[in-house]
Structure formats: C-alpha cells, structure tokens
Image (cartoon, rainbow, N blue to C red; front, top):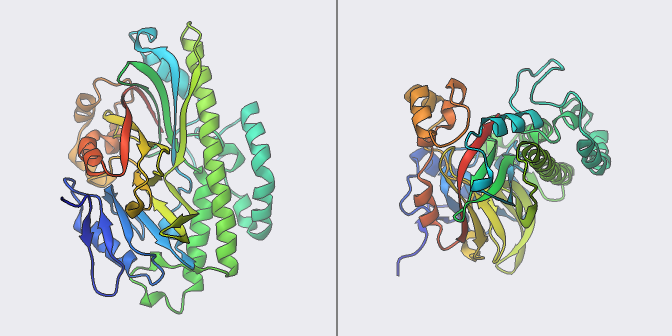
Length: 407
C-alpha cells in the first residue's frame, strides 16, 4: 500500500515526512525544510502539510516538534493567526439576490485594511471601540501588563485599538453556503499589530542571544531560545498571551459580523453550536509518541481525533470544515489552507484586474488592483491539497463563498 507521505532526508538531519502527493513543492521550500531539520533539538521528524511553501526561517505548512528549545521565527509574527466559522440557521433562500449591501454592512462593522502606520486615523484600527471590545480587553489587560512591565516597548503598539479588527493581506471575512445551502460566516485573522511586535521583538532577541553562534546556523532566522533561559520563559508567556488575543480578536469580529448581518436580513436567525475557532500559527506543549514536546504549527491546524478544524481555499474557491483523524505521524495536524504557488509580487505581475473579475465572478467582493495578489490562481488547487491529506482529516462540510471582505 502506498504511503500517504513522502520522505525527504539528508545527512545529519531529522527525517521530513511530507503529505504532498499530487501537489507541487518549490525547491526553495525543500531547502528550507532541510535547514530546519538540521536543528539538533527536532523531535522525531518534521511533518509537512500539502500547502507547504516558502516562509521566513521555516516553511509555511510545517509542523515542528522540539525538545528543550523553541525557534521564534518558526512561530512567526502573525502569532495565533487562525480561523473561526459559525453555521447560522439561514439558508441561501434567505439572502437577497444582490449581496452588495451585506458586504458593505460587514465592512462598516469591522475595521479592515490599513491607511497609516503613524497617524491616529488608521482605518484598520478602532477610533471608538465597542463595548464588546472593552469586555474582551478586560480579560487580556492583566497579562499584557505582566509582559510590558518587562518589555515596555510593546506598550507602543496597536493593542487595544486592533482588538476586533481584520488586518490586511490574506485575512478575510466571508459568507459561505454549505452542501445543503446553509449560510456560514467564516473569518481569518490573528493577533494583529501587537502580535507582530511580540514576534519581531523575540526573533531579534534570539538572534542577539546567539550572536556568537549565529554563523553556525543554517539560517539566522532559525535562532532559538533554550528551555529554562529567561527569554525562553518570557517568550512562552508572551506568545501564549498573543494566541489568546488572536482568539478574542476573532470572537469579537464574529459577533460584529453576525450583528451586521441581522440588520440586513429581516428574518430572525441564530448561530448554531456548530462553530470552530482554531489557530494555525502557534506553539503549545503536547504529548506525542509518549513524550511531552513543544509543537510549533507554522501554517498548520491541530487535527486530534474528533477535533474540528477549518481549511479555507483561496478567494473564490471552496473551503472545508474538517474533523481530525488523529494521525500521530503528522503530530495530529493538517494543512491551514491551499498554500501559495507564487509570491504576492509575482501574482501582481502575472495577473490583471480582468483576471481577478473572471476568477471571482460568483463572489460579492472587491475586484481591484490591490487584491490581485489574492487571486485564486496564485494558490494551489484546494482539491489536490485535500486529497493529499485524506489520512489526516475527513471532510464534514464543503463551503463555497458568496461574499468576501478583504483588508
């Protein structure tokens, strides 16, 4: 019987198990995987998801188990980035023929995009936060104070002002229909400016701590903290807080989107218990192969047996609600999406607004030059990605987008 994974290996490195049958993997990503596998504290092997592509230090689409050390750049700067999805009691028949007003209502309800890094008028931040934001911030505030007492530079971040906001790039809010034409709300975001600042700060600290040895690393972005060191403990505290922030961020946005939807649809509706809120850029302690280890998922989702997860396709493609199969060889993980086949710059050079309009003709969304980098053709085929990880998850619902809000 054919193995569900392919093996990549090299002398003096941990094995690399890749769930990539039928999907392309760029040579640069393979080189980056081999660099990460050379680190002496990798536990057992690296697990590589079918959406794998080049990242900073380590590839996106990697599951990196470690003992005694952590690599901040492998977690990245969008700490806790992930997905939330909720099924509503609405069906396609309850939606208007023209969905533009619904998209506009969502755009008004959730700050998104970015207009300035310096002024106080950034459209992607709150000018006046809602009561929901205040309530969620109250649960985060004491943890933030503990971190900023030690690292006061983090006070100069958009922390409170970004809570409940979307951001830019591949972050999105969508209305989707499942196989029974039931309406779902799904969104993708993380820990925003404060998470980026935390990630950047500790990546720099790891490189400073290793300045005498950094030339011996395969890549300077693989600089790490050893367990028990001051910066290791501080990083684990800060990254844990940022992951909590990201989860709160998605919950607030979901509440605001559902409220906006209720204003545009006269029929009363409810959000069902069928909801998922999962990270795909994070680190946590887990037990695998009988041992406690640190598991970094950089663009990967936990897929413990029975655990629900979300695998979004590209803008205009299908997305999936999945149930984990608890595959231990993958450290109980699955992909976090389709995965890019080209850089944002390359996509903007190759495709036009006309291409974007054709590819998203069935979706109420922006169709302009600023979102060409998110065109579906810049991503892998989501059906091939799902086929490659059939041993990791089972599909519970297949969703198709009808409204998409981009930052």
